[in-house]
Length: 429
Image (cartoon, rainbow, N blue to C red; front, side, top):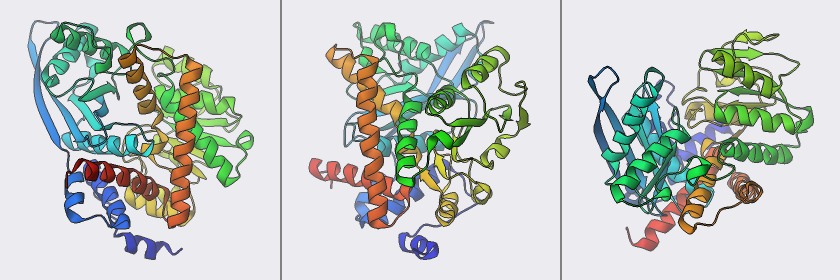
């Protein structure tokens, strides 16, 4: 299939300069809308969030001064069930980022078939500059501020960038105090002792590795003879490195916000994690060559996992990517113009809202366990996760093959069609 014809047919406007995440999300949705032939009024209902709440959170700091933080909660679409999505604490958080992430959560929940809509939250702050007590007061202040629109049957938050199970515990406790009874189903990603699910810590990576395993099968790639590079050695990145290494994949490069390391002979992921835990970064790891995050993306490897932030692979550098499989561990790491280049080069991309859906899927399991009071073993959690991720991967792959479209467009076609069906059945249009 000629790439230029394909892009013209789906009406994808390639814009290399515009990296606004919400505009990218809207562009990706428009691609699916055109493929599916969805009516303009239906598209109009999906292209913007249904609700946006911006809040101001006063927090008394340890020095006695009060500092005010800005936070957001965005609910994109709840046609298929309560909204679901993480909360980010990040100094560069913007409303457009949160809107994009909320819409991607709608499609993520839909593509793996779990009964949720999409939501997302964020607070503009640098948690690394806050003491533990300040962080607790901010966390409790945030959940008080958004309490009117969240809840186990309305919108269920979870951890995201720079938020942790401990922060989720504080938020659940604060909400429970407001309700005057215990509400574990408010939030997922909690510690096990207060209703968290076994397997949640590695769920995002586990789901991605299931997808990589299935992609290797359809591409006839022997994982025991493969190499991988991982951008972002946080929770998902280090678990992915461990799981891939256990399958025989050689991890030749990893990075974090301060830089990366490379060794053609491979790394022991556990030793790299131990080094990072002691030193705050993977850089200066013994016996490794220092590389930049940009260098890592362009290494000779079989599997590339961009697991940091949005817009890491664009039209400017996609042509230099040499991996056979790009598994999007982060949200939005590949831009639409990069997709077009990947298509032309024959790079197999596992799109973010499929690849990293393991986290929200096990969050769904946690919510089910909270609602029923019946808790599962880790083996049961991973068995259910494997089934969902494997079936979802092949549904997307088969759609791409049948419609002769790229994998991201195929994932959108599946996800959007399910949301549209739910809206039609509810009589929204």
